[in-house]
Amino acid sequence: MKFTSAQLDDGVLERAFTLDGIPGILWTPESASVPVPLVLLGHPGGLHAMHSRLAGRARASVVEHGFAAATIELPGGGERPRSAAAEQARSDLRRALAAGDPVDEIVDRLVLPLVDNAVPEWQAALDALLALPEVRGPVGFSGGPIAIGIRFAVVEPRITAAVLFAGSFVPAAMFDEARQLTIPLQVLLQWDDEGNDRQAALDLFDALGSKEKTLHANMGGHAGVPQSEVTGGAQFFARHSS
Amino acid sequence: MKFTSAQLDDGVLERAFTLDGIPGILWTPESASVPVPLVLLGHPGGLHAMHSRLAGRARASVVEHGFAAATIELPGGGERPRSAAAEQARSDLRRALAAGDPVDEIVDRLVLPLVDNAVPEWQAALDALLALPEVRGPVGFSGGPIAIGIRFAVVEPRITAAVLFAGSFVPAAMFDEARQLTIPLQVLLQWDDEGNDRQAALDLFDALGSKEKTLHANMGGHAGVPQSEVTGGAQFFARHSS
Image 1 (cartoon, one colour):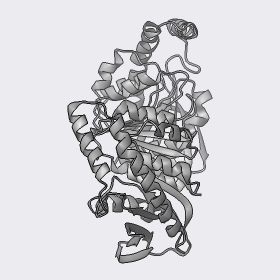
Image 2 (cartoon, chains in turn red, orange; image 1 turned 180 degrees about the horizontal axis):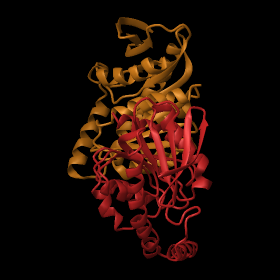
Image 3 (cartoon, chains in turn purple, brown; image 1 turned 45 degrees about the vertical axis):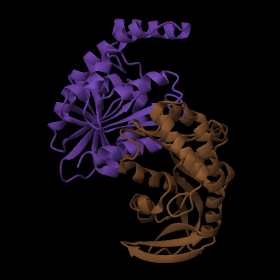
Image 4 (tube, chains in turn orange, green; image 1 turned 180 degrees about the vertical axis):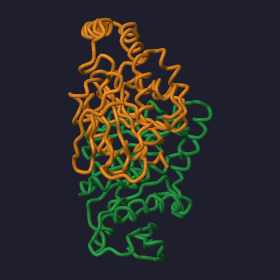
């Protein structure tokens, strides 16, 4: 893990890093005398375009609760090399959605390889982050794509709580993995999400195996998650880190 | 409004009162130098049996946010005279549920008169509470039955935000009133509520007219609302009272 830049903004130290060529960002409290818990921030890909939203989510945990927060670029996202198969699936998906055609097979082609590739990268990032003297567990995962969050939380026992965003297409095969989850979950659903079927999202919530799970459904489209959920997500991790 | 008892418990002054023969309880901060906002606490009836849960909800607003909280007994609840028609409807409902028979007509007989009778009493209580020097608006309504909360918020412009509990039978006629709501809403749903149909509750949430509404669905049965929702409800009112 190599830090490539650092800046201090109102009590929060933000450092860009690369890990085996994958860009990432780490946010920590400016002054922390002991190692702090960590929240990993999922996102749809494109660290640069997502920066202000990610930084806002990071600040909610760093400033209010003294946690660290970190994220890495997704495979094929931002400046990382595109996969021809993923680009083809993405274009097929757009066409199928516009035509009202079935999308299940396309979603499998798009999402399953992404999950297979991304989760080991998140695990490597977690190894590197927990090796830093200023960071310790417990570790939470926040955000999407929900298929990555589900797989990551199933295979990685160091993830102790998750806030998942029910706003992506989820392969049917992931429902079996969803049933294996046992950690506390908070699930965000945008009620009128243009890129997500509401009933499918409710079915996925129902399938999640955790005894302690809460669905927070808010009005509006895919990008309309209210600020209160950012604050609430940080509070959720704080409740589950002590 | 006549206060009948008062006790101080860890910074919170709890006073029992009667208003035109209806028992009620008011909780206020022990020391408040200015009049404070008010949260009205709905409940299924039976102040005595509900006391510890109501006091816990009151404390979340009084201790953390310096609000006042108050409640009154429902028509036919606790020590108040029973209505023969309501008792008959309640018994019919139990029998229909046990037999798997349709309940819509029975729910109408049970809930609509309750709403018609209870809401004017809540309005009279609100008049009396706002006349106290230590209480002012804004006013929030929290709890159930949701049919009372919907009617109360539709007819009473002094209610500026509500946390509704989607855990009661709702007459079909109330859906039209639900569409008229415009205030910010937080709706609690127990995912496996033995006394409530999940799809009907989701349909009711969808019908609520407010642009700013959030559904919080938690695992477990009717009485299993987690403590985090009590805290979260108090925070919701604090956000909407400034």
